[in-house]
Structures are given as structure tokens and as C-alpha cells.
Image (cartoon, rainbow, N blue to C red; front, side):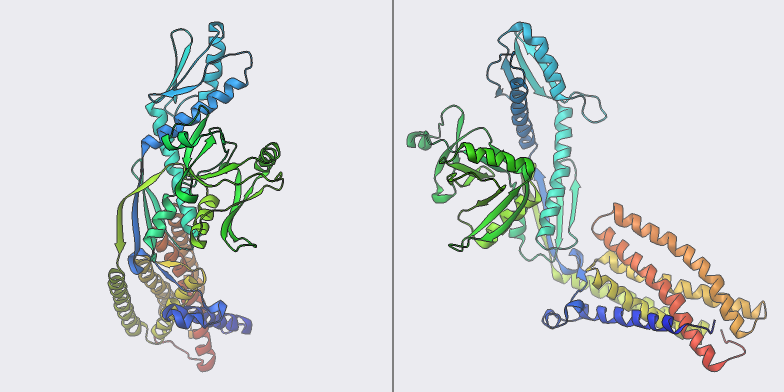
Length: 531
């Protein structure tokens, strides 16, 4: 017990000192923090309920999902029929939310049906219900109608994908610990602590960032542009430059699905901001073929149905890298890059509810949480001093060190402190005391019941109680890890503080107090212990 290695003494002291130094910046103003060394700048972030922030409730239009599914099925049917050169069909059209086409040779109806059944797949999830209803009308016209089960499955998938895209976009903006959860079948709740510009958040989230490349139809006349009546096979889209319109061919030459990166960069010649995009292997080959076959022609870069720019293919572009120029500011170019980089939002979302949590509410929560912690700690200190005297002093020191270490470790990981996190902080105080109570009572039992001397009582007290302490706290850590894994927002904040507090309470309650007791025993050599 008295043989405490010197390296272990210094390791314990050094750990406590470092954690204490790391905890200091969290109590300093931002101006002071900016002047500190880089390794001391990490601080604890406050959650939405403490620092205030933005709350958004987003809602998806299921009609938008249904329309997108119809258009995708139309393109899929066209592609599938092109793979069967011996089957002649009419144009694949959309009417009343259905996809239909005519087979010119009635003898090929069965072959077409087989291809369509393979195309539409089996059932929706575990229900076994069809996603699409395939019917033959008038012996040779096929009609594909989406089922409600298929639409429900598509909405559920789109909402899950949208939540992931929103999460990537918000994290790209540099915010920490946002809460992004689904509510009902077509709503998403977004809570971002400390955000001072909710308008930018809404703009960033609301952009679907659907990137497309289409060839410009230069045969569209000014009259057609004015009346918005494009020729067959083309469409008229708004043009960002000048606020006019431009005609493009309907087929998508290249989409943003094959994008791997997008960054904001300034042009080296005129200094204007733009977005440089990079395609994957398949996208690079397709873009190279597109640019090679259309040298001297214009191609439109379209984001969310708006033509950002329409430059010429001056030469083949073989490296898979292109630049999007337009009327950008550095902020708007960076926002577009984030949207493209984080992936296309599968469904348009609108804000149906917006709230701001004031900092005053957070200040009140912090004050009450701190007050609860101080009162609880003070009561525990008084109890430990009265009950265990000298060993109560060691327990008190362990409690104070434990609190400082929790704050220091949270600062290292830039963890977010929420109101439930404060509750977890207070809870760890009880856990720290619990460890010392087990040790102190075991020492008392060894001395009074088994008549051991002071050294033996402390030795057996720590060794026997440590087993129970470690076993109990391992199960608590497992619970905290599970809460962090399956929970979100405040639940995660509670789990983080609880896990860190359990580890530090074991360290301070067992290792630190044992170091103090060993030093006292070595210096004084008491025969009995007043405990």
C-alpha cells in the first residue's frame, strides 16, 4: 500500500493538472480564448437549451415524391424498351399520375409485360404489396399506376435520405451537436444550438441541389421563349444571368449523382467566386464523351431547375473536373458547394414552424443546474466530513478534482453540454461519492471487525472495494454507450457526461484518494485510523 511508484505519482498528478488547465478556457470570454495557445482553445459547447439557437420543423410534400417517382419510372421504361430492339412501342408518356405507352405489335405484349414486371420489382417492404400496378388496356396499351404501398415506401426512404443529407449539410456549416430527427411520416425536426443566422440555415437546408447537365437547344426561337412553348424534346428553363430564359434539350446528359466533390474557388483571372466540381470514374468518362462529341456547342449547368451558366465546350474535358460560374458571392458559392458535396436532397422541404430559443432561458437553466450541483455537493461534503473525518477530506478533494476533470475532458472533445448533461454531471457526483463510501466502509470493517492494523485495513479496504466499484461502473459505462448509440440530441449529451464522469470518478475515487492516503500513512505511520 505504501509502495506507490514514483512514475505513477507523477502520472496521476500530471493527468489532473492537464485536465484542470483544459477546463479553464470554458470559463473565459472569447477574446481571451483567442490569445491562448492552440492546444488550450477547445471549449465546451452549450446545447440548444442552454445557449439558445434555432428550431425548425420541416415538411415534405408527398406529391413531390410521387411526381419524382413517375418521372423516374418513365425514364426507366424508356431505357428498358431501348434494350429490346425487336419491340416497337409508341412514346412513353405521363398522364393523370400514370405512365403509359402503346405496343405496336400485339404479339409482343407478353414479352413487354415480362420486362416490366422485372423492372417494377416485387413488393413494398415486408407487406408483399406491389409497388406498381401493371395493366394492359385495349389489348396493346400498357398503363403503370403507382400503388399507395409503393408511395408510402418511397416517402419513408426519401425522408430517411433527407435527414442524412440535412445532417451532412449542417455539420459542413461548422455547427456542433445538432438534433435532427423525423417526426411523423413526412416531417423533420432540426435543432441547431448557438446558430445566429437562421435564415442561412433555412436557405441551406431548403436547397435540393439537384445538379444536371443538358445541351442547349439553340433552335428555340425568342417567340417560343416568350410564350414558354418549347419544341418537342426540349424544355425552357429560367436563366440566372439576366433573369431571362433558355431552351435546353430534355434528356439529362449528366447528373450530379456522379459527383464526388465540390469546392468554392476564386477564378485566377478575374477573382470571381465559383464552384469547382469533380466527378467519379463513370462521370469522368461520360463527361469526357459529352464534351468530345459536342465541341463548339453550349451546355447548360442546371441546379434545382435553374440554369446557372451555359458555357461552350471549347475543347474536350477529359479530367473529370468542371467549373460552375455565375452571379455568385463567396457565401452563395460556398453554400452551393456544400449542398452539392453533401448530396442531392431527395425531396423539397418547406418550413412549417420556426422558433428561436433565447439565451435567457439557457442562462436560467444553467444557474439552476449549477445551484443544484453546488447544493448537492455541499451536502455530500458535510456528510463525508462528519462521517469519515480525515478520509472525508480526501473524498472532498476527489469530488472537486472529479468535477474539474469532467470539464477538461469534455473540452478536449468539444462536447456539447445540455440541460440533461448537467443532470448527468450531478449524477456523477453521487457515483464518485459512492465509490469512496464503499472504500471507507470496507476500511472501517477491516479495522473494527477483523482487528487489522491501519496499514492492513487500508490495503484490504481498497483492494476488496475496488472489485465491486469496477464491476458496477462497467455496467454504467455500457449503458451510457448504448444511450449514445441509439439516442440523439439531449440524450447523447447526458450519455457523454455520464460516461466521462464514471471514468473520472473511478480514477479520483480509487487512484487519487489512494495516493493521498498512501502519502499520509508513509509520513505518519498511525497505528489506528479514526474512520
